[in-house]
Length: 230
Image (cartoon, rainbow, N blue to C red; front, side, top):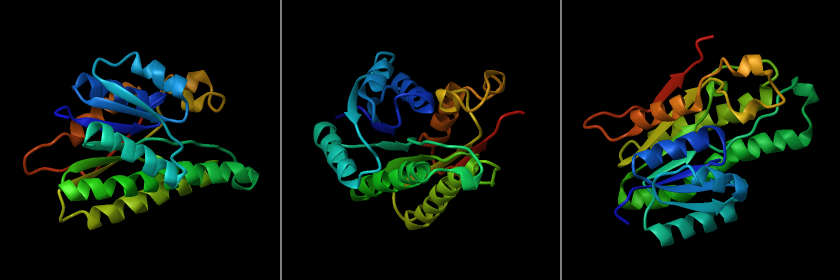
């Protein structure tokens, strides 16, 4: 298709929804990817450009392969992949239950790896495309009560920095966004409202990511750090 295509994981809420709206405003066909179809439908109703919805568990490599092959067969190409799906559980290291540890490593790290692996073959073949990793400042500095969350994000950071080296002689661009906390449902039941209302607006982050990843002559921005004022 002539229209550019962006695939956004974790598109059902928070930054994923904001990114979907931003790219829609810019005329992209939006592939809304997530585990909950109803959430994706609510986001789709706010879009101004064409879209398609795909239910996906990014922790299952075979499922990722199937969905991405479906997108490519239906739309012909994927210009931008945004690895945004993520989860977090916050407590002292010794208190984190095994299942929560698995969830953070599987979704935050393995999910990013699987989606990137699948799209790389396509993007390398056409020697074009952009992969965006939404990582968080938890991938830059250790934080109390966030040990495993940080571990998963540090893993994505290492994966990202290695890919930059692997892709340096190709037309595939890689971008990492390290940002602080945003005022989204992610923090419901974790932080009080008086704290979250002072956090960054995800729409602002979506604007920053888009502006820093759009094509410019003789220029590429590999990463950006976005922090709360306080």
